[in-house]
Length: 131
Length: 93
Image (cartoon, rainbow over all chains, first blue to last red; front, side, top):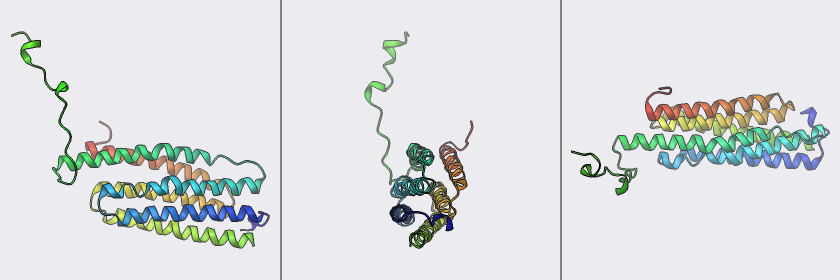
């Protein structure tokens, strides 16, 4: 930790605050993954760590390196943008896959698919196809 | 004083993130179904990326940043492919 000796006090306090906030939020999200009852409850918990948890740690890293090198260091924004874009996609894919599997097994816990609206049902055969 | 504060909070953050990774690893080992394991693997990827960023602050080198970026990229691809596998039974059809 010798490289941080010339860090001013306000930067050290802010970096520590954001680090602890991010780590604690990630821990809360993972505890939710461990403790919640069903899969559809559990899929909500780790998003706390993937958005606000890693976001706080990235803010701490940006602040630390910007103050230490006396120039703006913003390449951490890459990870932030990537996480914010990809986390909803992956978890929605996973939730739909789990729903499909549960419905295929005939599970009673998930709602059944809604029936097709009447306009999309098969048309009367005598109006389109000639006999 | 700032060095002591920073090293203490970095140590505490590393302990928190290790506990979070342990929770995700436990869910991988005894998740009841396959989708629980995939979700826990995704969480483990993100926690590992966060822990690497904390390592980067601790050592003061930006080398760990690239590793965290690669882990985030691989986690997205792996989770998307595994979700496809759970739904269809194969990844590329």
